[in-house]
Picture 1 (cartoon, rainbow, N blue to C red):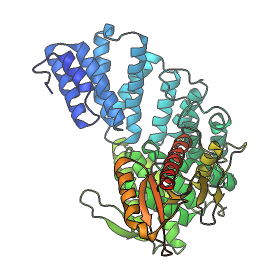
Picture 2: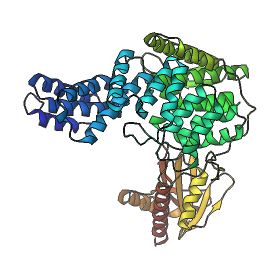
Picture 3: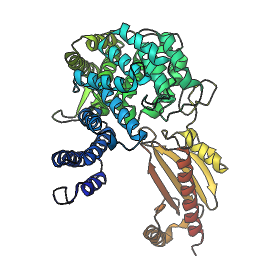
Length: 525
């Protein structure tokens, strides 16, 4: 790519915006902003830094936005006319809010930097503005100043969330509930969640984020069954979403304190690789602390000998680690990160918070966890229901049969979970394969069979089919009774989940191509 030294800055900026997300794009935007400063082009410098902030946010590295946001604010203070209308001003204030929030996620942001940006935001929006009250509440809570946090909470909670700088209004109930739960008020936390659980979610992260926020409060108020339903529903989504990593600590703590230790170790084993690429330091600290708590309780329950695979990362080699050893590693990580926050903050609050997590004891006797295939919709928003048509969920038998029901197809369900139906000249079998049933396998068997003496002809037919057709993959099976089965299959890896509407398409494709294959077999001379 021709860079800004050879072409105009505006053209270079346009090219940089077209680069793939990643460090190369960020580096080019940084160079363009610096060149714009050197050549006296504040408009391009501002545009480049706006693009840089959004690139950092997309990479999940909010802490890196602090300096470009500060530079954007300074530029606009000098030349307010560079902002094109009120939408641009709101956009800059939202970025200013996000830069302040970066302080909560990592100790790499200096406390004075965040306070300076927050004070500046208060000067522009007013000291009692809802976004300012929320940020001051969360900052005081982060530092361990609960009285100040409660004062700001009262100012924050009276707003209606309509301020364009106030962050996601749909997630505000969960943010409030997390604070109240941390202050030892589970009933108040559940009351704060009602707007997210009782009506239209207003956010694509809801209601699952609210359900995760309610897990411990439900346990503490004696509603273990509701907490179990909420865990199943929310974890169905959070298990694979990159942005949901901060919610995993709540799921692990629920498993530990709700008595679901074996299930919790399954969750920990599944999610442990994500700890090497966390959303931020705070979520890594909380995940590690929750995992250490779970491991400690599992050891006490006699499960300490179980081994969990931990992939290699950097200099750390891959290993099979027993639960007791893993718990020690996770506790060391959590306490180290808490110490880093406290060193930056000048308090001991985060270390004390993590110590209190590690000292927790079970809150309730375990109740049965509902199976994903058995849960259904209900009036209770914590009741796990079927995903929406466009909502990605793990492949399940319930989703598979629902896809066939949506088509109006007749089928039978065998004891091993195989779904079997007949379409034209084909018998099609649907199975879930893989360690977690995440692979959809469809096998079509032609009703017509050929004598074993026609083996060469059968092979030639299947080879020709595979040469000319993408799906399904055809083959010959000899059961040893003198007759040949001509079959074909389609396999789809759905490890990242599948939406019901997508599954209907996959089932329809398997049925139509399988039936076409069987018809071609029936047409053989």
